[in-house]
Length: 115
Length: 116
Image (cartoon, rainbow over all chains, first blue to last red):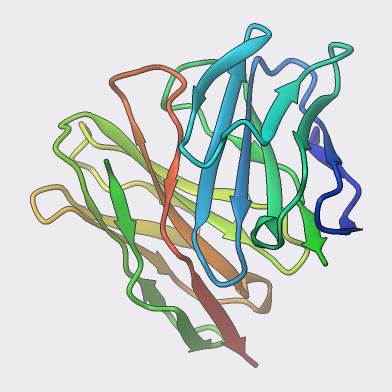
């Protein structure tokens, strides 16, 4: 069964450094998302991406964050100048189309620890 | 903005018994979709069941069923004949039907323990 894959599973970085979280969505999916989950808190929406551009973003997704789909398969989240409060589990998701009844398929997550 | 509330941070159930996980949501919209996702220890979230708000009939998927009360904005998940593999974090999620590709709004989750 096709699935969303994320790498790395765990990333430790020093405060102020840049990190890139990688995701390979399901191949025939067109809509991509990044969510994050700070430990013990709810899963929060960061950004959605469609047709090679950001479709929607939350207030969390400020200039520190960026996304791109560099090669038609990978979908990356870049976090510049990481802060301690960026420590969280980051989930990538994809969905087949834009219809809102369509489920999103989630990856297993990347645990980011900023020290 | 829409909010989703799961008031039970932890629940436990005896194997083979039935458990109900609660979820309430707040929205001014009339057309939307509701989902229950399961997040096992491996951390990949898996869709358990989905409900269209315009449907009065409660969704059912094998041992999983929902009690959807639109007026009360309640969407509980019932797991019958609980199995050890049901142990996971369960998230309730809301998605608007008004704008395509809208984000999911998640609750804080309920951690379900299944006791052998």
